[in-house]
Amino acid sequence: REAHVYERTRPNGTVVEVRGMPIEGGGFVTTYFDVTEQRRDQATIAHMAHHDALTDLPNRMLFSDRLQSAVALARRGALMAVHYLDLDKFKPVNDGFGHKAGDRLLIDAATRLR
Image 1 (cartoon, one colour):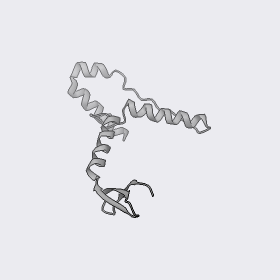
Image 2 (cartoon, one colour):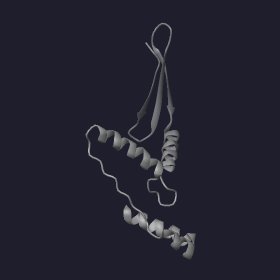
Image 3 (tube, rainbow, N blue to C red):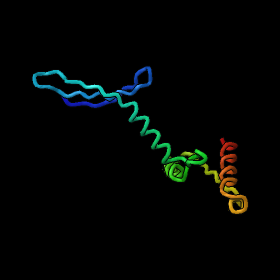
Image 4 (cartoon, helix red, strand yellow):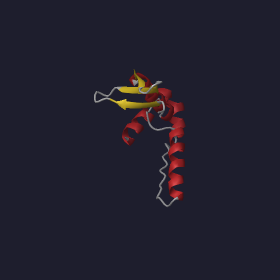
C-alpha cells in the first residue's frame, strides 16, 4: 500500500484534499483539508495572469498559449483560424481626449465583443 493524495469536490462546492498514509500493521491514517479558499485564490490569480485588468478580455499570454495549442492540433490535421482585431487611430483618442476617454473606449469595445 502506498500513500495517496487526491481532491474531492463536495456537492456544496467545497474542495477537500484527502491524504492517506499507510500505517504499520495495515490500514491508513487519512486526513482531510478544506482547500476551497486556496483553489479559489489560484483560479483568481490564473484569471488575472491571463486577462486584461481593464477590459477582462483575454491577454497576449492567453492568446499565445491558445495559439500554441491550436497550432499543435493543426499539425495533426485539425482546422484552425485566427481572428485579429485592432482599434485604428486609438492613440489620437487617448492623447486628444485623455486616458479616461481611452479607457472608456476600450471598455465599450470589450463589452460589444462579449
